[in-house]
Image (cartoon, rainbow, N blue to C red; front, side):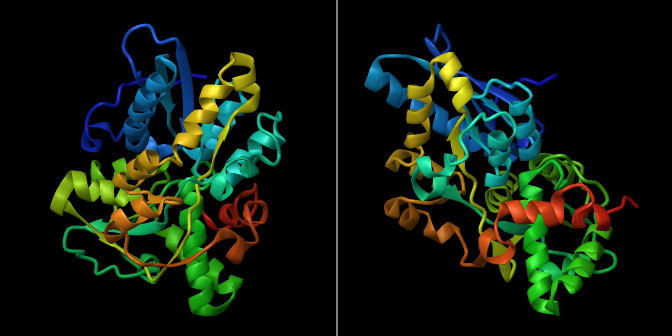
Length: 340
């Protein structure tokens, strides 16, 4: 398996294309090293978080720690761990991808989500729409994405966790507006008929939209949308849809690896630090929604619009059922999508 390694120490505008980042907390001779295998849009979050955790761990134990970051489509990242990528922690886009670690090699226990607060989700997010400056195509909600003449950029649900959130948000919108799964299927088929290319991960789709100038609208993680707006200023506008999905990325230590490497204590502390006041503040600063800190929630409330949100359990009966019906081989996505 070949992995690309780069340093992320510069703004999003200059780092959109990075697939794997190595960010040492201390430059000389760290006595501990952790690998955080994550999904596409968390690069900037974990650059800042890792620096804070390294300071905390040094003050607490006297030890230096270097944290490496690996990023890509969430499904691909899960497969990389199963295939041997030596992750100490997995911070993937959806619980279903982490469940695969339990089912394929017992890398984590089946009840991994019970080990940390808030179902092991220290932050949440949702899915929004990003359009060109001034919204020239007049895109206001999900139904506009299925119209003739609209080019939609979104990643591949077969490899990207974010893409699965995108797909399910669009499906549930159509199910409620047009009535039933059959109508939702027709709508989503029209929407994906407007997708010219499926990148493997969310950051790849952001590059396609922002740097390659393809598409009229990008379906994006909320944090990714606001990072774009922050870095590129007036080039893009964020459109908040009338309905979206509550995305709950979850985190875990990778038990087989930490026990082999002797890093369980620091890996567990690393994830617990996400729930600390400092960790929650960094989460909000990077446009994720803090899950547990009232102080951080209040501090960053104004940057998050109020959206009518539904959960994966409410609308689809959980990830296992959604995966089987929509993303497994020959399920709904395979049936409706064909490249034009």
